[in-house]
Amino acid sequence: MGLYERYLALRIRRHDGAPPGHIALVITERDLLEQGAYETLAEFFGWAFEYAARVTVYVSVLDAAAVPTLRRQLEDLDAPRDVVVRSPEDPTRADGPIQIGIGLGGKHEFTGAIRTLAERVDAGELAPEEIDDEHVERHLVFPSEPDLVIKTGAERLSDFMIWQSVYSELYFTDVNWRDFRERDFLRAVLEFCNRSRRFGE
Image (cartoon, rainbow, N blue to C red):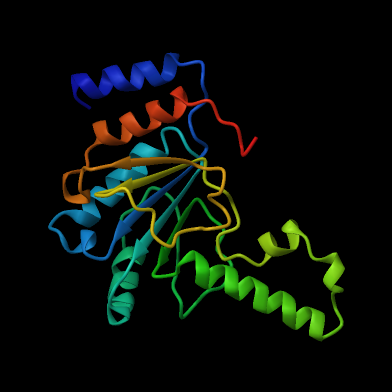
């Protein structure tokens, strides 16, 4: 850790605001094609677990054929915690310290939850009037809500955790993933600490 990184970390430690407990990262398939991209992701996990108990990564993809290769590489990642990877081919519920979704957008996830609830209503297991927020959340692939969502490269969130990120703090940086460093991560955490969260109020 360099001098500037130490300075940022000290400011976070001395800040009155609590750091995020769940951090989400949005990157793209193209980001992972850059040299050193997976090493940066492994380092990101190390930085994140200095503050958070959970990390979720969403990898947006343009070519569905790339998903199996991305999945293998991400499952083999040298990470500090257990990694759970989900894709459209395996949209089962994921719960763990590191959750990664590849091409599994929020629309797809939300539609799947609604379809499952409709099937339960059709089977007589659930009455339509009984369906509430908690029922929907129980059928999402990624159940927990991130406190902070970091998007690199552009100010566009993509189709990511539509339901869960409603009250998340969003942090956009024009730094591309290939250039993302610890100081960029610490700036995001410090910005989060500086914000007054209202949770939709």
